[in-house]
Length: 298
Image (cartoon, rainbow, N blue to C red; front, side):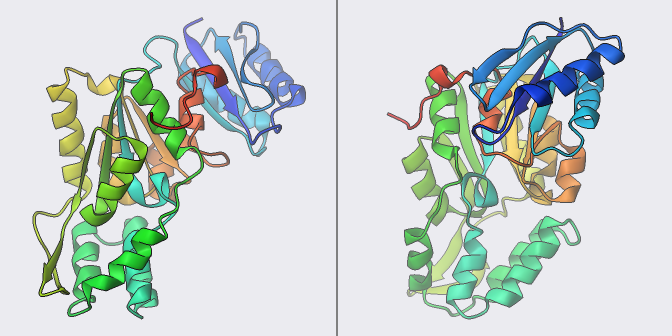
């Protein structure tokens, strides 16, 4: 049994009928499986399967036939990752922080449209970010504080970071957003490190420029590689998770790249997807049981 297939649904949403449908499909394909192992009652279960992970996952997907169940098949060895590399906006947070700052400045629709184009990969991230920040030229920096006060964490965000940290993983927050937000999120969730862009502020006003090099698609990948090397971690032992085109390179570099409610360009490239459930699924995919999950950093 060299693959493990994990199935995750909303609490109470994973039943015997779904598991049986997958089991029949695996048997029809000539793949042997082990017994059902429940990681979370009614929510997450795994099966050891004698088959290639990609083939196993494809069979499971067809058997589930559109049911709201996330699935991930991985090699049995090395499932638990030693580096968590997480995007912030629309991943660790439900917010798109720059869009919300722009909304407070009365230009929300203009900025959100540019954001959406960038997330879909229609324009480059650097171009998108420069254009959006430029629209904020001259606005008082005080427009940022209401967005900071309204930060909203995605379901499972605390548990994902706290659990991986408690089990020895290095946890890093990377964002094409801004340090004013990553500083807060890092402190709240217990990330070991964080990197993001910097608003240039002069005399209490946004200049419409960035205060340093742009943190974008390539620099996200570069920092993942740098952090892994610094801690003696192979890329295969890294988990990267994000939602947009800006996360593509880091998702492809990590051993386990997860698209979290991702845009189509990222969903197509990611090794795994969380489409229906929350960030705890990234723990279940690694084989964590409910009894091992730490709900908040201590």
